[in-house]
Amino acid sequence: MRKVLFLDRDGVINVDVNYLYRIDDFAFVPGAPKALAAAVQAGYDLIVVTNQSGIARGYYTVEDMERLHAYINEELTKVKAPILAFYYCPHHVKGTVAAFTKDCDCRKPKPGMLLQAMKDYDIDKENSFLVGDKPSDVTAAEAAGIEGYLFEGTDLYEFLAPFLEAKQKGQTHEGV
Image (cartoon, rainbow, N blue to C red; front, side, top):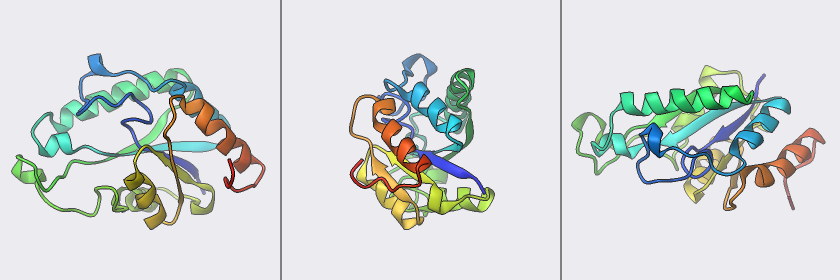
């Protein structure tokens, strides 16, 4: 079974610039590459679960987003932190692109992306967790039966290192 660190993308891996899709606008959150490399070294696979309503709103295409995800993965692979899979929700009820304008089960806070990843991979739910920057990320994690943690800091490595250390010691994250 796989131990997985699930990650929201915007605000956790990359600096959140509204509706990011251009590589030129991409920047890692401070400490993100180091944090993700440490997670991989600690035995975690990395899976991204990200709401991408900009697709439904017509701001960018699925292909634009996939190009950005490939770039992110190339950069993280260079530091030995490859992303196992990217799951995304292109839907939004206020979209302008008819194919993506709907309510769905994959848009966080609903757990659809996490549940799909759990179907696709043999995931050890007890030893997996999610880091997101919004309460909806944590809600989705809890609905999927895993722990979820809210990243409100500025350096992902400083935030994540105590969690990884506690997990390696078989401890909970309480008080971390």
